[in-house]
Length: 143
Image (cartoon, rainbow, N blue to C red; front, side, top):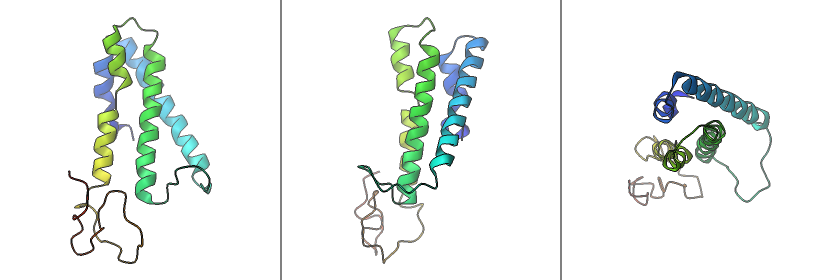
């Protein structure tokens, strides 16, 4: 899980000393473990209420990536808030992982990576893939 987020690179960008790197790595590991524990605890719970229902594997994976991103952003904010830094570097740390999350989402929604369209599915997909059974990329978002 940690490798898909390129955490080592992020840590080296945000920190100035080995002590800071170690502190941030420990905080991120702890945050990810807590997120995984939370995910495991609620993985079997039926999610029938709420405004947004994650009904497909794709939407569940997108949500999972988003939750992981927010979890790590909060851990970074909590750790780095006590460090002496410029306002610019604090702003940068608030936006960490957003590009990676967007890339992960784009990869999930790539029409070329999905193998077969389900002809019996009455609903359009979130990515637009398979909206046209004959040409599965027709109707998908421009990527």
